Length: 184
Image 1 (cartoon, rainbow, N blue to C red):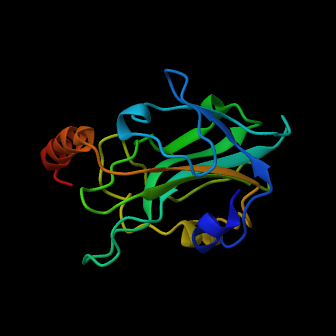
Image 2 (image 1 turned 180 degrees about the vertical axis):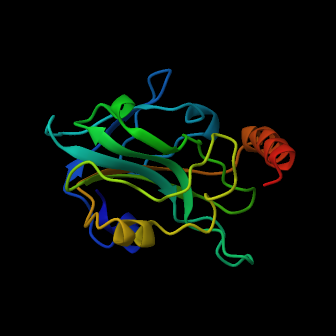
Image 3 (image 1 turned 60 degrees about the vertical axis):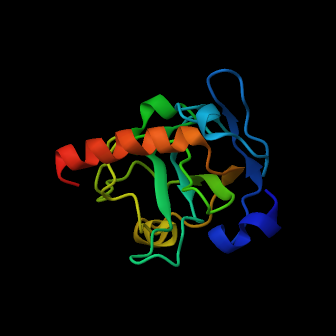
């Protein structure tokens, strides 16, 4: 990973790369810009994994506006635990995939994917979040999650950058309506 762009978000840059391919064939290349409409659906993800080990996959945005109150960053976009090898479908989904959604006027945001090797199959106390749930996603801390679950440094990673586009406003309307109907 490009350490200058991610070291403030992850402490130590992972040495291995995660291969990420979105429906339609768009791939994530370290730090390249993708449009929100290109990353709206859950991607295929793979890394060099031992088939008998368990992993945690995380996607988060460390750049959500931090001057706002309450503080928004980190935003959890995807979290899957207890993945056997790199077969994401074998894992337990804690936060369903949610694509990029940088608010207008906030510039480029990094969307960082990390894989952590687990010590074995684990129980996680992290609250679950559905695709359109706001709760348990904003003002979240990747570092705190990592520390509480004794995950250590990330094994593999990749990231893209994205900024606001008109698609984000449409997506946010759906997100807000879903959150309001659930009382989030």
